[in-house]
Length: 127
Image (cartoon, rainbow, N blue to C red; front, side):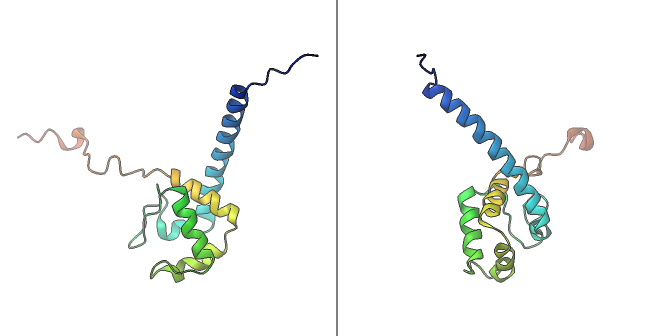
């Protein structure tokens, strides 16, 4: 009989690859949910928050998930909880995971260049 050469290393590589595929799918599904469930109406397309609504992008997965689960259970976390509770109740636990994954990875597009001014536009500051 031939022995299988399925090593721990090979199992790890296959598992890592499969997790990356699933993780990537969750980001896409989560982003779709973010827009279809109306999150972007208050929190903006980049999750940085509109007007006085809070920024929710780039937060740790478990922090977002914990808050959404509490809101889904009807637990008020702030003065704005009454606005969020119906949105959270409309999400399944799987959808909460997907949105939390997407928000954790949502890049704050404008933050990197927020205070940089292209030299070509403004010149070098000379006379």
